[in-house]
Image 1 (cartoon, rainbow, N blue to C red):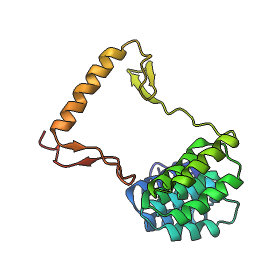
Image 2 (image 1 turned 90 degrees about the vertical axis):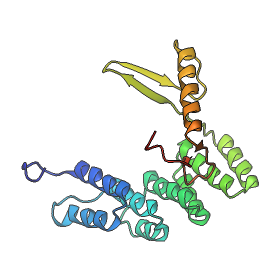
Image 3 (image 1 turned 120 degrees about the vertical axis):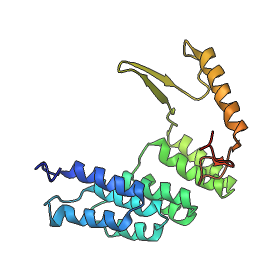
Image 4 (image 1 turned 135 degrees about the vertical axis):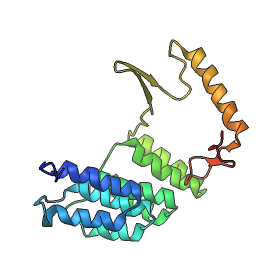
Length: 210
């Protein structure tokens, strides 16, 4: 963009910081973060700070991320605290998770995803009484869990939306037959579901030769 003479704006740096986060580039992300104001005259906003918290948190630098939040020269919003909360679940830090959740509750956010995250963290720690109490608090607070949809687009016009165990689609029977076939192929290759929240799945045998 610089070579093409294009002007860099706040969105440019949010994309850049997000890329650094997914690549595990904390220090380089910090360099870019600092350059927003020092080189480009862009004052970082809560979106940029949330990216940096996510960046540190993904690598397990949770104390560093928390200190970063405390040093933010503005009121942290729900995106910032939820970035910390999500990382706390990945790395099993219940103490900081409760701090993040407390701040989210004080912000009076009704986003069910934040509540679900802490509930799942309690579940991971086998704190079932806390899970029950938290679910009751969600109900009393009128927080309703949002349905999670999957979207599939065919071509450039036809979009299909699915819920878990959805059977409303006109091609439902064919879809489930295809999914069953895929499931059998995965099992044949050694796929084993993993309950650990740090991993979405476990592959016992490499699929690269399949």
